[in-house]
Image 1: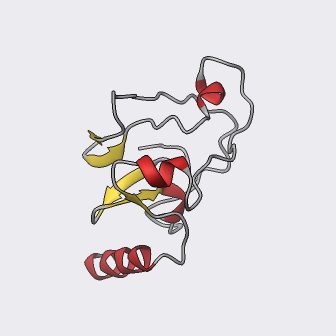
Image 2: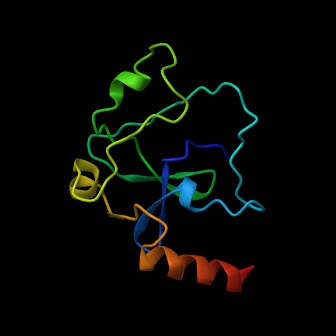
Length: 116
């Protein structure tokens, strides 16, 4: 499955962006890819859907719709409002993990290592 770096998956009750799951082995960032096409699934409310067997978030419009509204490419990695206290933090369908130092992310990583 290919997703944007900020696309989040529901893991242990938390929304974790793909960029925080990169381990260089099972989960990699395809920096060699020169173009992408994003397809978004937007629901009435932000939610979780099953995509290729993984619980993934639906599109959340946090003021970035102009990046995706059939417009020309602006940037491969635009800065989104995914900061503590931002709209995404307040209105996401589950608690978001926003940085690598979050204790919940550290616990998720430890569990993944034990399973692997």
